[in-house]
Length: 217
Image (cartoon, rainbow, N blue to C red; front, side, top):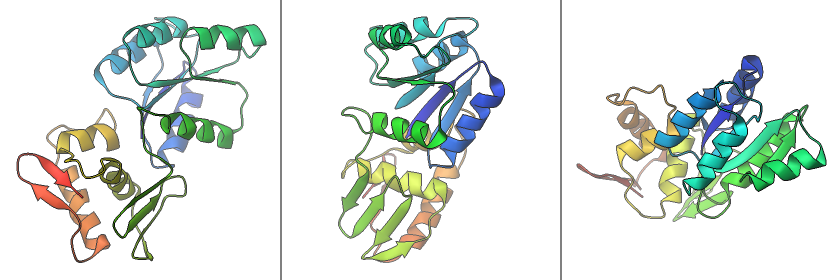
């Protein structure tokens, strides 16, 4: 799952982003509304955690523009304005959920995951294909009942392949879903991570490499 965290409180934004990254999510951060608007226009996010009172472009405008573009990105508004009128106003702007500050971190994670599971965004909490099983929320993968000690990136790559349900997944798509905006587009990170994942999955190799196209379970 790929998430954008937008908050002008940089310490809070960085803490939220770091916490979500530990939950096997690819996370980008923006501290201004105009920066968030640009990132949302060029990247395919599953969820955006969006503060309302932002410099540059107000969070309400960011939410409205996202809705007008018909984006499938889900919006979780995270703000200190938590009254009933504020919540209703945020939802009417196109937000899918609303969480007032201060908040409990486990609730934030649960809400982000719930939004990511909605139709048209991300995958169900447990993915299965053949003898492979991935519990997304618990970060646990097994093959034929054998626990797989996978790194965060390996788990995320496996999730993307399982969620594709047999479809070919290109290296570019994996970079988009698993790595953040700072990744070098010419990196060999996908190939290296795929090689490590294959070793841990063991024989027979369940991943097909289709030259020039990508990878397929």
